[in-house]
Image (cartoon, rainbow, N blue to C red):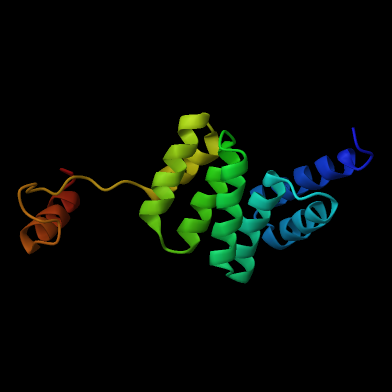
Length: 149
């Protein structure tokens, strides 16, 4: 085991803890330090989420996370981070697809929470009409206000 392995683990743990507390700038610092020690898929994945959130570097973040998934396709953390990046980028459908793919590899509570926060749309009231049809729109609003939907 390399002598820096313990330091790497500590940085990854501190970084993921900072993310869970909403301290993304601190997390970014931890993951940058971890990447200087060794470029692992986990460090790259978390770093990608941080740069997307704090620096708005969405294309680079998507690229880093996609590469992490290519290297470790069984790790649900990469799917979680990529899903979060897609949410930041306003790509909700891609986010949902990616998060669901992560759940196929492992039941992960963070992924489940992220999917729940995105919500799901119900079927249109009149399913034979388009969702954007005014009848569907206003019937849906009315039924929701009446507590029937």
